[in-house]
Length: 226
Image 1 (tube, rainbow, N blue to C red):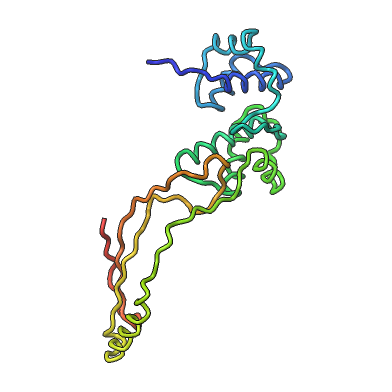
Image 2: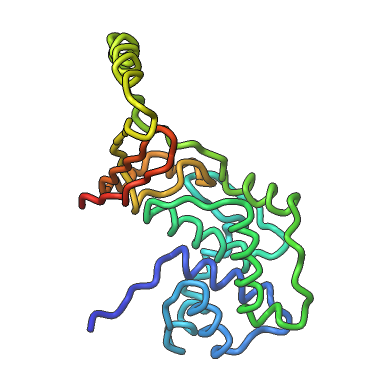
């Protein structure tokens, strides 16, 4: 099995976390933190090498960089790094998040991080969320769909249909219409970073057909065309 590589950014994050801890964590604690942070379990030799003099030059970067922007750390940098990684992974999969979803995920991450185990869980207020979004350029974004055009003759055709339908009782006049259900499409509006605004939506769909009479007394079962 091919050994998974450790990136420079991951080593920098490991060194920065290690140096912030008082007292200094053990190699086992470093392994657990790295696995929780990056879903990758390192050996003790890799931990020792990453924290050794070979990578001391990585310590000169005092702030994180995302999409070329230099960002200051928040009050809980370990939690924030994991939350940002989760946000970016959602975007790469074509999804979006919301403020409430970010708060809930932050609470889950807090409960899983051993360095916060003796601290009460913050309420992750609107102010905290606002500062997190500003640091990482996460903004509300609406994904616009295609606008359909209505034929100019549609209004005249509708008048003709109403005239014809007027010759029948309401219970004998039926209307049938088809619509698409995009069952895998993500939300049209949500939180994304500035670099992820152009992800194409998944437009997998099925067609649904509805039919009902004019007074609503007879509603046919929905037809589905996959």
